[in-house]
Image (cartoon, rainbow, N blue to C red; front, side, top):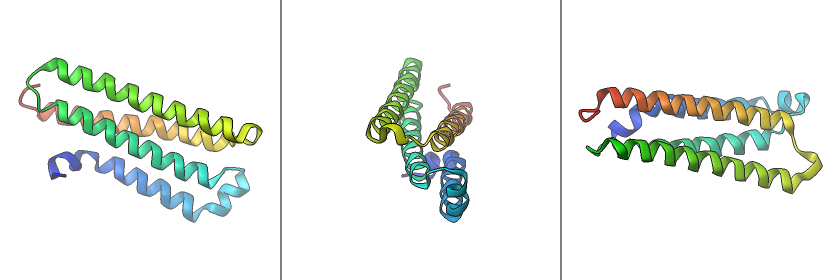
Length: 133
């Protein structure tokens, strides 16, 4: 992948690394608080992955001279990200039933907001630089 694609999402990558480092090194603290380390790590990985895919889909649309391509990509990537995350959360809840770790799901919900904010910020910065925009 080229530098033009990856440079704007550097904060996204840094948050991913930071959250993983915190979850791995703070395992004892998480357990003491009743937070599942596995749920946080897997949720972080999922959210980073879908945020990167959503960013990539929308970034590619910026190359088009058609302004509707950007809107379609933005809505499409949002729908993919939202529904994939909702489906994975639903599967997790159905599999573990009464043992759902609500604090870990709360952390994942906060991470969803953080990743979405960083993704949109990177796209808006990229859009300002775009010749067609």
